[in-house]
Image (cartoon, rainbow, N blue to C red; front, side):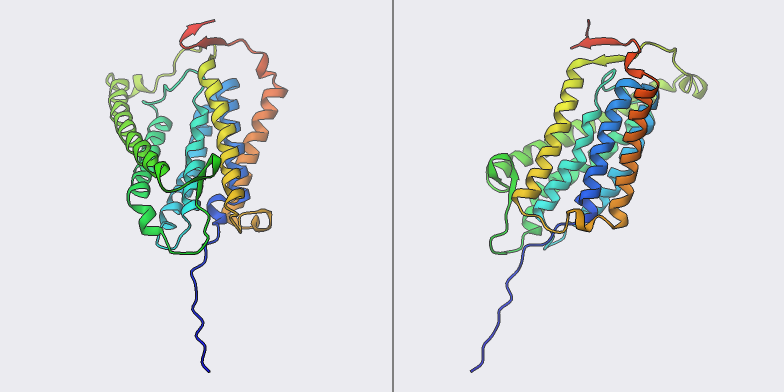
Length: 276
């Protein structure tokens, strides 16, 4: 009697190089370091943002290569949440770096991520989907499914994101042209030193984004039972680089804040643009 074994598709494992424990902890530390630098040492803010974006660009390019049929849908959602987590550094004097390299680089990055989001929510889910039994597809709190109304929301948010990013990119080009309209020497001229400015509304928003992003990513990994992204797989180069970069950045920033007592320096506090 002959018996035929029919292989059934299985849920794809997690990708440790995109959202393994080393990558996640490194990004969390980098977000915290950028937030602290923006708040206590604004002169180093641009450097931290560029370092953060370099790591995020590498993760984003990895995400693009891991969006083929059979790749993890939930993994793509988790990676997108990680990529948008660096919005948590929008404190200090607000969003005022459009005419600087770090600001333009950031706008280009989020334009690319938003464009990927449009592809993912409109076409990518269907293209990547594999008919596997009992594959979890929880994409938000409350065990909200990746499909249904949440997918519609994803389409709307990604489309709005592309429009906002393109508008910001156009504004960046205009701001850069205005900055250098009087020549390169004037464009690169250092501004007069002023007391650091902190917008409390943006500070509260940034801290909330950090907390929610961390909790949401860890929650989705847990409820979807994503495998191969835990402590046992931390030894890969793709995880150690962001882990070391983020850990060192956060440690050095905390050291400077405490050792140099940067938290005692006077600064201007604002709430919705009004000086307190």
